[in-house]
Image 1 (tube, helix red, strand yellow):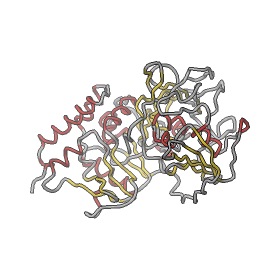
Image 2 (image 1 turned 45 degrees about the vertical axis):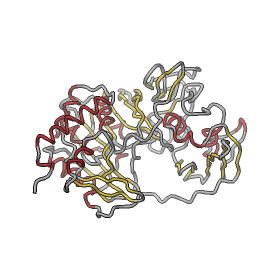
Image 3 (image 1 turned 60 degrees about the horizontal axis):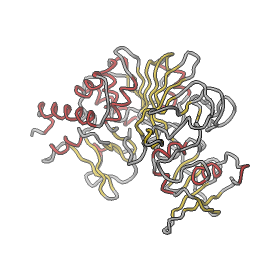
Image 4 (image 1 turned 135 degrees about the vertical axis):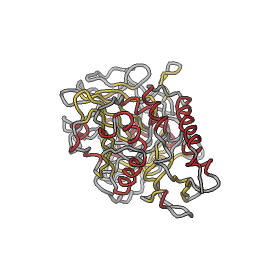
Length: 443
């Protein structure tokens, strides 16, 4: 029995169609990246994927009378969920799988943006953190040469499947199971490092394993949904500087150190009014900026921000009459000008204090927003703080600046008007966040 996968001309047309769709998205690419998408088949790495149907995810495979429609979706510029709660779509039962998505094939146009920013040359030593389906690793193999590519993931299932698919496509890369936060010391140094999962801070191991002059391209995302992709150049002294790509990005987070059971969230009880409604947390431009203010142990659960370490929580609530309140609970307290950088204090500042926008699209901060790119392994920065946002330090910081892209400088001052919404554009004299809309990418 023949399937759509036996028609070479149809498969070629599908790859051409995907490359054309990426170009129509407004992505400006080098000819080498376009060539990679034209030559590397996506369907080999996504033999099945999930479609959301009510409360379950149902697998969709190439077999069956709707094979042509399946192929059209595989080669569309869209995210494809390939694993739910550790169960890959290939192995799922026909009646579907419930749970949360744990792996997927990234939006191709965003993959193209990131690969273009990585600027891979033939012979470059490349590390990919997050093998996923193996599709991005295959594109890297085409660009650098398969023998120069190392890709790691945290589960044996993903690693085994990725290795098998790469072999089927003719690429013999190094595929290993490892904690992505540790990089891959056995293959260092690397000329290029790319992550297909988000991190709150660039791990020190990645900086250590990147060769001087090398590039790191990685999604940065905090407790909230908004994120952006950083492109950093490794300096001889061990630090990295660079810029954010203009496109917002929300990736699945890096899974490191095993699964951690979430503690119970305390019920917020003390509330106050705020001009900033709960819905602002869903604005990607604002939520990325706001997430940089929160500590490394803060998670979002719906409209509640919870500190796993301290047990504090803050919940934003939007009421039918249009008003909003923020309620807090736990040991952390907040008040007045003496507010400390506690979770509840930071969360309340994010959700309702002066300086945060009253609606999505307004300036995110009256001054430059800055954060360190190289905290120590214990999570502290050189000044001993927890790697949090600390404005105004004349040291090496990553910050927003200038027109267009959010860029980085090695030193800076905290003058008014020097920053704007992360990844935003200037429109009508204001910075407009580029993060509005639904999530655009996953691993």
